[in-house]
Every structure is written in structure tokens, then in C-alpha cells.
Length: 182
Image 1 (cartoon, one colour):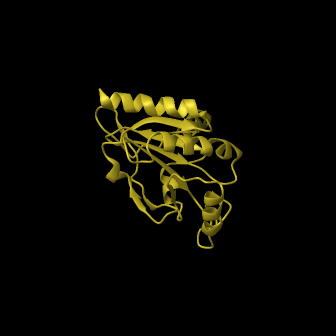
Image 2 (tube, rainbow, N blue to C red):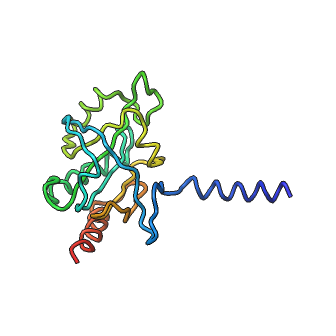
Image 3 (tube, helix red, strand yellow):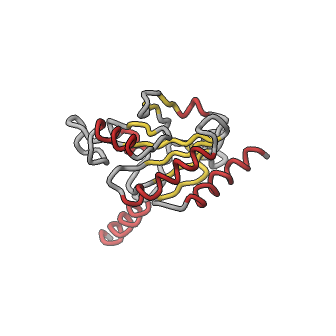
């Protein structure tokens, strides 16, 4: 009996360890993720609630990740193509610099170095600084990059673990964008 219970417990844990974070699921099955309220590399505060009515792409990345280094220039291209957050699509990054207070954050460099890294690589889209690690924890980020695409009501419509091509990102955004315009 203990063996069956243990196997059942392991099965449940394995399923939940790779789950998309579910903050809220409504009766129609729409998933609402935790709100993000952080400041970007330019000092501008962003709150997902302010982007209702827009399609939002949130890309979690870290500076040491080779897949992120390949994908982020494509995100910059999409940011430009979709109107630099001035039209129907909002593109945001989220980074997690380490610090003396939060030495276990996901990136391996501190905020000052990460700001320089972002500037040196011309990552012009807003990258929000999750200095406490709260957002990375709430979104259960375990793989880099991880991308979430939300519809105009803030409901999760796509979740992409790992790097993908620019075309795949664009296809995911356009699919959500086109469902909004109908």
C-alpha cells in the first residue's frame, strides 16, 4: 500500500513540476497569470493591468543563457515590427539580477552589470527587473527563455518553453492578435 501511495505521489509531483502557473482559472477555462508590476531598464514602471485591450508577450530571460542570446535579437526585431509597444502588441522581457540581498536569483550578474549588458547588446524592448525573484517564482520559471502570450483580456493563450524562431514567436502573437480583431 505504501508503495502504491509513493508511486501515485511521484506521478502527481512530476505533473505539477512542469505546470504552467495557474493563478486564476475562470469557468470558461481562461487562465489569468499573476500581475507583474516592475520597473524596466529605462526606469519606467510597468503594470500588466495597464495593458488590458492589448496582446502581451512576456519573455523571461537570463544573460548567461545561450538560447536567450539567440532569441533576444529576434524579440528586438518583433518589438520594432509591432510598433515598439505603441500599437496593439506589448512586448516585455523580465530579468532577475542577483544581488547581495538576493544571491539566489536566476541571473549570475548584478543589476548594474545587467543594465550594461542590455545596453551593449541593444536590447531596446523593455526588460523589467525582478530584483526580488518574486515574479520568476510566481511564474515558475525553470527554463530560459520562457515566453507567455496573453490576449486582450489578460488571459494566457500561449506558453513557450525554450527558444523558438522569430517566425514561431510571430505566429503565436498573430494568432492571438487575429482572434482579438474578429
